[in-house]
Amino acid sequence: MRFYLTGLFVLSISQLSYAQPKKHIAVSQSQNVQLVESVMQRILPGQRGTPPSTRYSFIFVWRSTQEPKSFFWYSGSDWMSCTISKVHKTNYTPPKGNIAPWGSEYEQQRIGLNNIKKGDTLELNPQSVVNAPLINPSLFKKGNIFIVYQTKNKWLYTRVKAIKRAPDLALP
Image: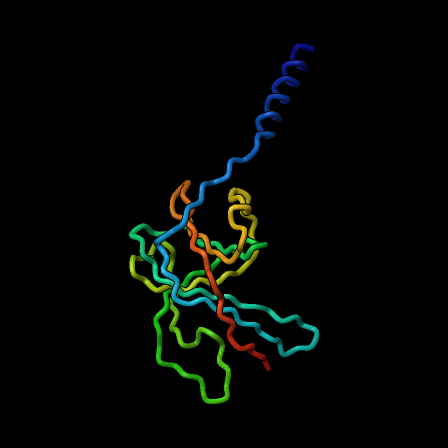
C-alpha cells in the first residue's frame, strides 16, 4: 500500500510539471536582412484536375556576421520551412513572347547555413508547412514576414511589405 501511494504521488507530481504553459520565444526586428526582391508565381499544371500551385521566392542580402540557424516564412496563417540558395544575377532574357519561370535570371548555388557570410545574396523559398509553437503568432498580425533564427533564444524577423506577382506559368 505504501508503494502504491508513493507511486501515485510521484505520478501526480510529474503530471503537474507537464501541465505548465510553454514560454514563447522573444522576437525582435532585424536589420540583418536587406530585401532585394519578393515574388509570387502561380504554376498551372498541364494535367486536368490538378490544382495550381504557388511559388514564393525572396531575394535578400545577408548583413550579419553571425551565421543563421534556420529560416521560416509566416504568411499570416501558416509557418513554412524554407530552403536557402546563394544566387548571382545573370543576363538571361527569355525569348520574346515566352514566359520563363521566375528566378531563371538568377544562377543558384545550394549552400549550407554554416556557409553564409556577410554580404551574400541569398534566395529563400518556402517549402512545407510546419508547426512553430514557441512563437506567438499574435505578434505578427499582418503576415508576410520571414523569420531568421540566429541563436538559442534570439529570433529576428524582417517584414515583407509587398510581393510582386509574376505572370502565371502554364506547364505543358
